[in-house]
Length: 245
Image (cartoon, rainbow, N blue to C red):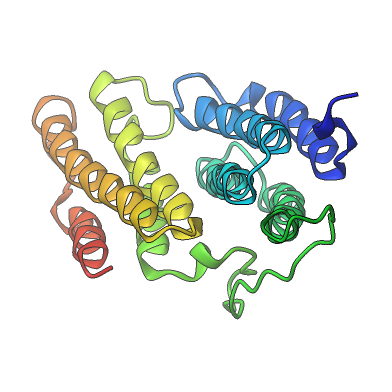
């Protein structure tokens, strides 16, 4: 038996990844969250296994940093799936709680590995107070920049073509807007300040790209009556907030 096979968190992550494949099967391959969700759920499993193989405490902890980032990315994918109508709010919340359990177990294991002990005692994870309209499970959900990114996604889904993504440019907007949300979530969970900065820079660049593709989509495909300028300000706010981090 390999070392990672003895870890409870590995078994839970493995089951969660298998369920993620089934859960996202009906979402539609045009939506980039399908591949992000599946890849990130697999990344959790792979990084736990790699960490168990290594000997150095800091090296082992670094692999769990990657796994933790992937759990947050999965949680953000579930938020987007809910907005797109691919997942009910109740089911989204249920699945996010499963990823929260993995998150707590990974934090506890990371702490133990840094101390060169073998323990899977889950660690507390304080996400902040819940808002009246939704339960906050993860810290990134309490960030204004994350919520503004989701607000843009809600508006975009209401556009002609925004839900079924039948137009190429529409898919490019979706890809970039999704990148904003996922990179804010994953970057916020990284322990290294340099890692955090890298993910937030990707999110800012994606927001600019989403705005440019939205301009192209409006000029080439959107009906003239659809006004995008006020909602484009969501993306301007995202960039401004990310630049302050």
